[in-house]
Length: 142
Image (tube, rainbow, N blue to C red):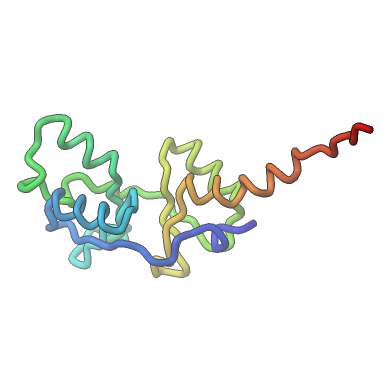
């Protein structure tokens, strides 16, 4: 199975100037654990202006006493992201997430964001297949 089969193609996108509270409200309304952060004004060579903000990033900020109304998303964005392609296998995606210690991968098709795949997406795809593979025939009793 491929990343394209598991990913969420509709992605919440926020800008670096949004507040953490605004991002959290949008994430909660969409019931997602991550948002793409697009910074169209990025001028740093070698960067795409693409990052990710996760619920964990918001939790760390609020837990350390920062005001979510004053904290900009850009100050909490992960910019050195691992990017997957739709043609990656779910095994490749799971290995990248396990190796990197994160739960979401941005999926890009060429230079454009195509979606996000999460650990939950991978589990959702694997669970029925694994359950069927592990099911053993039972003996009928007379």
